[in-house]
Length: 483
Image (cartoon, rainbow, N blue to C red; front, side, top):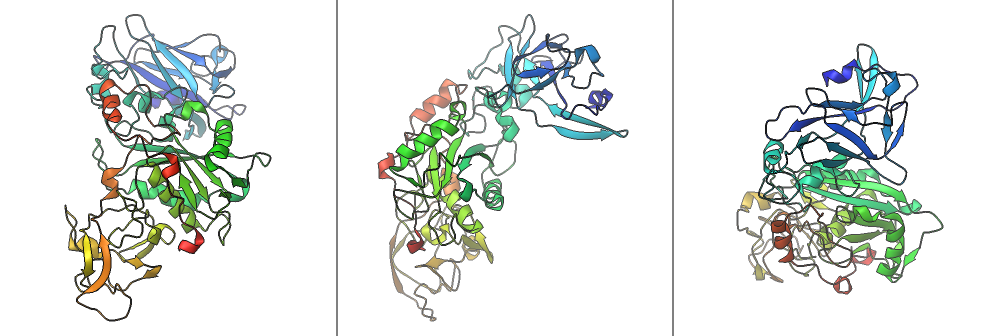
């Protein structure tokens, strides 16, 4: 960063420079006079006709100011037309070349009264010719040790995005820009929308935070999942279809126009629309698990839904994309012992946890089966690490009504104001911890998540998993009458 402060501000240029370092994968030291070329990008300035060379520390900069490389060699680089990232190539005799994709994310830096705009490209560890690559992900073993990734697993964090894609991007897409990290699980959604049904940012933030708070462990020692929602295109008025019918036929007309195919192995695709198949369903997933889903709250009392309804429906439909059914691991809706946004009981109002209402979350609990009758005094019980203390944090909703008591005790399941030792509630199978059962691969006819740098072992493991239930078997999700 200190080297960047040699650059002076310019009143003419609004954006700034792209910089990075190139190092030897074996030694970790800077590679001198490696060439960093713009393979695909838009360049303006006086010095666009040649690549940058690294200095003795491996540092290079595409200088938009003209102060470091000289005014005759300025380069202002941006993605080319119809591209979302600049394509760079790093090369040096004796080393394997490396392509990477970089979408500039400029940071404003003020130093000594001057302003700089800089964007940090990924560190590139060049692999000498002949370097072994045990997992076949295009990153040699010695470079993997530098990045902290597993040289024997092309997807160190298990999110179906290869280590190479999370560091260098894939097929013209820089997912590092969206927060992808090979040591922390990442999920990506592109969301397009009709003008009247643009989701509220507060709803998106609520779901993003729910994933960040997820009880899921990562190789870097953190917990949670990075969910990036790219609220991308507003569907033009001339393309808006007020009723997607048949839903997936009409959906594909819009998807084919607005969703770039280069993203198909990286991003799930969502449309926020009016309605589908002439009904009032809140949404639908293209399978379980799946790649695509619809949020369709246009015919609800608040057209487009309240912030809470948007958040609940987004997380619910995306949950289907991730392999979750209305009963977690089964299509058994409104299970009394299943405390998840996937149940109609909680999709719209959210869960109430530790007195906080409106919580959007998948099940964190493993709850034992209920065989007919229940004691309202002792309520439910957990297994596999779920304790009475965990259950005591949760309020329970049944038949559209919040019950007094908690999932752990004093639960008035028939809502008659009297606690009883035995009340018939029906038979419910044991409920799962949803977060333990997330399917990162998607599936179904909309496509699967998983880029071409995943090694053979990762692809083999995926082939053993379900490709998703056919789209015609997926139930439409809830209507206003179901609340």
